[in-house]
Length: 211
Image (cartoon, rainbow, N blue to C red):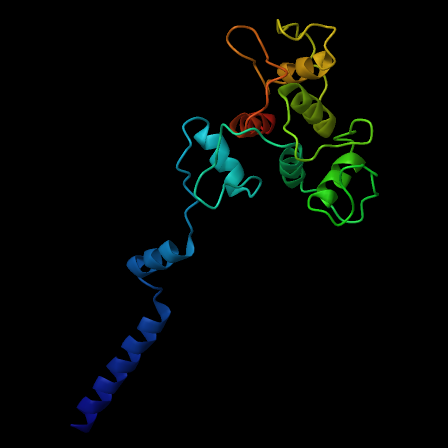
């Protein structure tokens, strides 16, 4: 009887040791992973450019709104655009020199981003104003992108948009942007330089830049 008890005890200890060494079952592991991985937000109003939008959302470069929308057709403001570009480039916004714009001062919302953008040569303002809450036109966007990323004209590119003649102030910026494959304009051969750039088009162009 004593020997039988010793054998049973020995078997129990072996089984206990094995149970401690064997990893969790795949079912348990899967359940733990399911609770740890958070699904990216699903916006209720996206129809076009879904992959590009969610790519930048997952990278923390752009966000949606608390009501679950992305508002792709809304125009983007100058401050919003600058903030997105600063995030994408991972720029430090602290201790930047004061650009002395009339319409934004130290301590105000967006000041650090505006100061950073000016210091980096992304923006220059207009007669002392930067208009942070003003909307951004497609022509202005072209200039900001060229300045921000130091884009240059690709050799051999000669396409022209019918509504951006050589006399247009943004002619070179638009041409450079197009030669880099970031914009292709519209099917009718226009670029619509004075139209406001929408949130979805801004994301689309920024996504193309990284390709």
